Amino acid sequence: MNSILHENADRFIRYKHSMGYSYVQGEYDLKRYVTYTDEHYPDVTVPGNEDINSFLSIYVLPPKRTTKPEPEPPYFFLESEIEAFFSECDSMKAYPHLKGRETVMPALFRLLYCCGVRCGEARTLKCTDVHLNEKYIDIRLSKGPKSRRLFITDELSEYLQNYEEKIRLIFPEREYFFPYREGCYGSGAIASTFNRVWYAAFPDFVRNGRPRAYDFRHHFAYANINRWVAEGKDVNAMIPYLVRYMGHKTLDETLYYFHFVPEFFPEYRKISAPLESILPEVDDE
Image 1 (cartoon, rainbow, N blue to C red):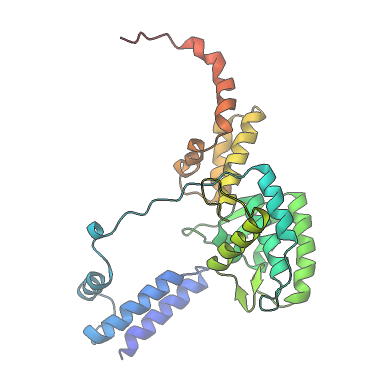
Image 2 (tube, one colour; image 1 turned 135 degrees about the vertical axis):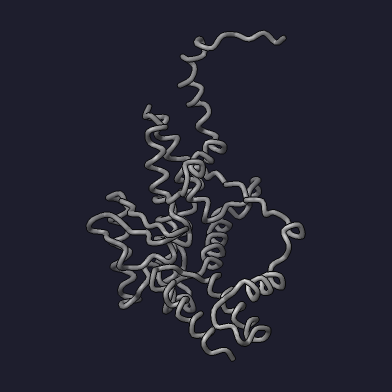
């Protein structure tokens, strides 16, 4: 075994973790590279072009052989659906093998709904980054090397303070704000719990589209856009705040939601109606 390469890889992984990155997929791929290099390039101590290209040619499929994944369209919650979902979520029963789940999950889903954070940001949120008295939470180095501070409402702060009192009795020395055993829940557990609650609330659900926990993030975006339009606010002036709050890298990522917001277009027609006379009529020919 090439001990120097292994040591260098382990040091790099520890460095990424110390910077706050989860680095799960990166760590997995790096360890595969080290194993491959051990066998085929035993003298390599630092990654080089030849060994990296050889590794990639073995483990990465050529682009033409892979199909481009299609993003799943967002599901638009009705307000009645949200109310029914949380009503069912709050009635979740205790499960011996998942200690505290009936307390953690309702709070985690409310954070998704109220703040539009990514599922990964919520489940890996650490207690040291939650400041309920000051009414803000810090999202550190999430999607890309950027952090952001999210201020929360009085109502959500009060709810999470009540949650904190309950969960502290179950996990008195926890690291994660939404704990699971010695760590935090995985993405699969969030998805399966959401599905279980959703179909308990709507056993006969047959509507087109498949709702997911991530759709609370979509809801947060278009609900705010709709509210600003209904209140007569300058949406163009408000969008940059939404970009920052949601942690988007570009304005286009936020403007994406304008294509899907069904309630926006009736309001838009009202706003644009006075401007119609400005545009001249154009003959069909």
